[in-house]
Length: 272
Image 1: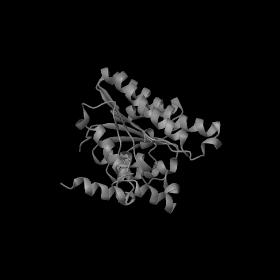
Image 2: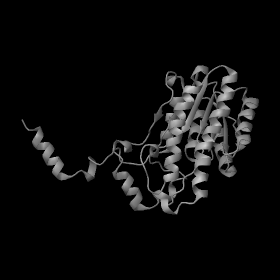
Image 3: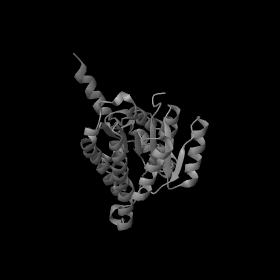
Image 4: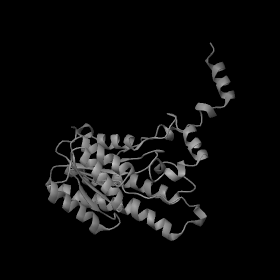
């Protein structure tokens, strides 16, 4: 029960990472307040939390609206007595060729993925600072904060900004004992990515360039969130952890695509 006595709010909890984090936190003893714009999925997550012996607070929430985030934090404190952990997870992705991207597609991605995180961090940060007991804020970035993607320029930009924002917020809130870190998931099968990975060529591409050889699971992200929310990271802030199967290592010189000529050259160099 690594989170016994903790109270966590998790946005984007109707599925994917958010659901996995909510369930993992509940299993480890935390009270959870879950939020999402998708009410049907949210209620399913609530049911799964109850199966784990916890009674969640479930609220519809649009993370682009300050009033919705304020209500989430206020009702969390009213129900559970305090807040200890904010997980700013809600996000969207638009796969659009750059030259065809509309202003609306760009703006929606920034509003949800970046402004939503800003609002969660600021509103939760104010509450945690008032309480005077420290706390944790966990932001969801992406491996695409580090590399580009031709069809996801708006997403890459938003997630890189989240990584940078995490550092600034960590500095701003350190004096209150509030730790602020981020998670940058790699290629993982979720509701958000299911359409993309349904294409065999796409799935094969990612598998060939992930050193560990497979897509990740939302639980892989939830376990990192648990680590960041626990006391095991009490001296860690402003960091981004990338659970990505090694994708960011640049797996172009290993595995089945490794040029045979380089293997032969390596063998020659190792000879005495």
